[in-house]
Amino acid sequence: MAESLSHKFGQIIGDLLELALEPHLQKFARKHKLYLDKKGIRKARTGKKVTWTDTRGNKHDLDFVLERGGTENKVGIPVAFIESAWRRYTKHSRNKAQEIQSAILPLATKYKSSAPFVGVVLAGDFTNGALTQLKSLGFGVLYFPYETVVKAFSKFGINAAFDEKTAEADFRKKIDSWNKLPNKVDVAKELLK
Image: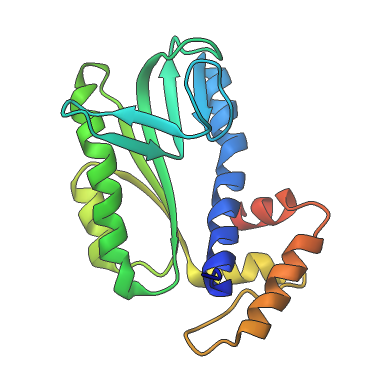
């Protein structure tokens, strides 16, 4: 089955969020003598995913975990669990908020002795209800509205705006424009502005 181009473009935006966050988390980790675990190869774990297991044996894949005492070769004590997510339509925002809380809260409970920070970085269209729900559960929430994302891409000549009627050919143009960008980090920096 062929992958939807709208889904593929959404993945690009999700990857952009991670690209924007990583340098700031890395700087924070260095300053506080923590290890930042992120997607990719790490000798201390198998595979490329950042996977943690809760008290019931359920595995949860996360975007970022800050660890005290962690190294490339040793998993440390988690002091922060951070997830990022993009949603274009509010009709999916509550489900995504619940998915994130279902992944992170059992881990925060397991590691409560280290009082881990739980955070989420969201972009796109999320309802006030979804944002309030996460905040009420103790999440730190950083939110980039849809218009902010579109504006960041537009600085580099990419029209990132779309809706349910956007043609596949238009998504192909957006994806091709993104792939031709020589330095994607510049878009991440623009988003953070």
